[in-house]
Length: 263
Length: 263
DNA sequence: GGAAGGCATTGACTCATGTCAAGGCTGCGC
DNA sequence: GCGCAGCCTTGACATGAGTCAATGCCTTCC
Image 1 (tube, protein in one colour):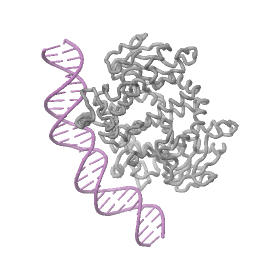
Image 2 (cartoon, helix red, strand yellow):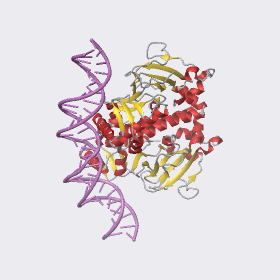
Image 3 (cartoon, each protein chain N blue to C red):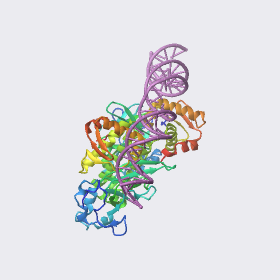
Image 4 (cartoon, rainbow over the protein chains, first blue to last red):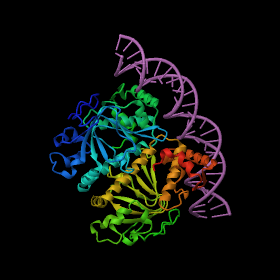
């Protein structure tokens, strides 16, 4: 099961869904333990179940494959009851909240190996929509099953705590008072580092989201994002053509955005 | 053990610390099960340990009393290794981060019964200082012990997940694009509701933090906070004298701040 | 009770970013 | 290959909030 479709437009990889599309596919250990899974944030949970030990039957229903979804399709919706968390297998996703007046707020973008849905634990409903930005596939984990697993495997519990806690740190950084340049630089560097952590090139990648999604996420106007990128280009910090991006001076960008960068 | 000192300036309540001040006091079940504790966010964890069952010895070290601390004293510091979470017993606390240039960012204010320190799980160090705004006391919970308890008591695990997840929701709201009026209105209503949830009057309370702390927390300038409050006063939304605040039209304020309010 | 220091308020001005508007580029479908 | 639609860029202008500065108020401490 390849991950090479991340930047592509075809969802060729993956088993055909059992019923319609987006579909649910049963999980076979051999499939779970793919190359890709090694970098997944939930691999430790996966390892507990599959990996050739389906006899651990109480957790048999822990995980299912989901998708492929086409760009623009919704994985879950704001207000849906919370039952599962999702790991992105392929493609990229944005999460967004709609307020009373229908104004959108983009909470974040998620790459293969990253986890969405943990913010639904408190209200017990999804606080946001998850929308595929490119053709995408997911692993869906039953949260009750995952919680039970966590009580048996302290490492899993710890890992889940860390995943949420990390999202909290990141949300707080974004909530600070930062200029457009700082926000933009930090956004690009962060994205690069996350791609790198998943085995993709970290200084040369495709932006799967529109300028206005980026703007919304960073609390800027789309025009400001455009102008900032143009300025970065003029300074030789980036080379950018449409949505293809090359971080030409990542250290300088990192310094610019340091106040917003966690690690 | 009274909670009546929240707005006061004396920390009279509580047992004398065993060694110096701020001191640590052993926990006696009878003390734990005070009136106050019923509204504490960690009461379910407490109930597992104390409440007349000290024979549950593996968890004996779960909780300790801490304090009193005087206004301005620091409970834990940014960078300290993460070992415990804290529940506020009395007084109020702010948490703040310092960036590379020493600029402060106020993350939040915490009232009696609320929990601080959960954001330290991911980096395994406290990401912020916690500073008493008034004389304050705490319950300190060993996090390893709490985690172990959580593996045995799924309800506790669930509760911890919820506490972090809720902080995540709130941080995200603050990260959105909101006017000074929205931010200020939401802040006041939220504070009132949290006081009310802990048994204090929710429309008539004392602001234990300075205008500039509020401003910093909301990403505004202190002058903007001042001007906004003056405008609210002129519109009859609040009556405010120094730090004494009366929410005169909480419904209107709530409407103003609705985009920033969770519940 | 008076002086001092910190906090709060108010006004005048500045500036970063948002808004509005026009035009260009790109990719897709026919 | 043309035209359309959506996205992106750029410019001109508006504005909400920040900054600077002066003054007032309250608390504390001698």
